[in-house]
Amino acid sequence: SKFRFSKMADDLPAGWEKRQSQSTGKPYYFNTYTQSTQWEKPAAPGPGEVQASHLLVKHRESRRPSSWKQDKITRSKDDALEIIKEFRANLESGEAKFAELASKESDCGSAKRGGDLGPFGRGQMQKPFEEATYSLKVGELSQPVSTDSGIHIILRTA
Image 1 (cartoon, rainbow, N blue to C red):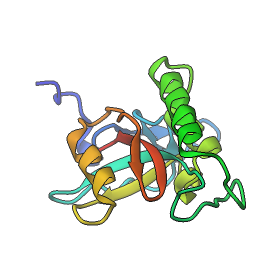
Image 2 (cartoon, rainbow, N blue to C red):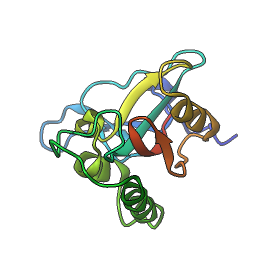
Image 3 (cartoon, rainbow, N blue to C red):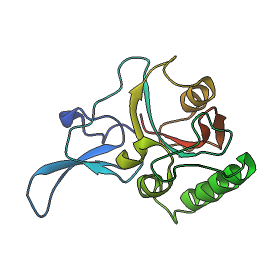
């Protein structure tokens, strides 16, 4: 099976590897889907839960049209969609890495974690976001998803 090589000894969620820091010698964790790293051992989603990272582009019709990047977001919904499509193309081509792009470009506070939202279950996210995430395979990138928050690209990570 394709899961034969997963690192079961460390009991890590799919897509995570334990690595050794060259500078400190301390172990750290690397997410092969998002290319993000962290010192804390990642938590695995519980039964029925998924885990995803996202990149959010807000627009003036967003529920809260401001973000850590911009006090007042004035772009149109169409402009937000064009931006998202461009980001998605850059991710698809391999020109951009998800965590790096999300940390620079996402209008969500999760940007500081490379877009990682952590594990969540049904009923915790807005319906279109939840449905899109649950329909993705692990490691798969969504088409643009519109919610009350804005327009998202979702990467399912577990």
